[in-house]
Length: 148
Image 1 (spheres, one colour):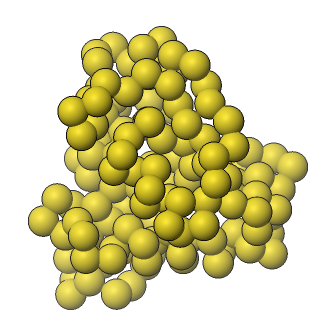
Image 2 (cartoon, one colour):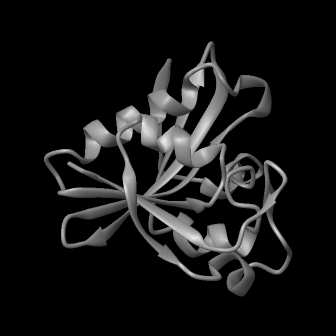
């Protein structure tokens, strides 16, 4: 496995990033100001992530997406662990915002994140279509945090 920082042509990664955030204009709000990381295994792109600096020693994992055929093989976990190690020593806290989903919240909790706060109606107020995950309509943004 190799994780690379992508400095140019970030929009080339939109098809994969759209798996982690379904609306392109939402991704474009953070893509250029964020650090785009791409995980390759066997020369094949498996996972991409975008991390932003939010000031005051806080970083936020804005997007984490793994190719469907590569899911469940540890690539997302490896990416998050890399991000934690990269941010440690440079900041004090790593946030991740996600929908209230039985698929994503346990994933992050298993990696050491704990619920921090919620933004009511985030998905209904900011997306132009309903978003569903695991059969559940996403309404509130759930923020999880890890102290670095």
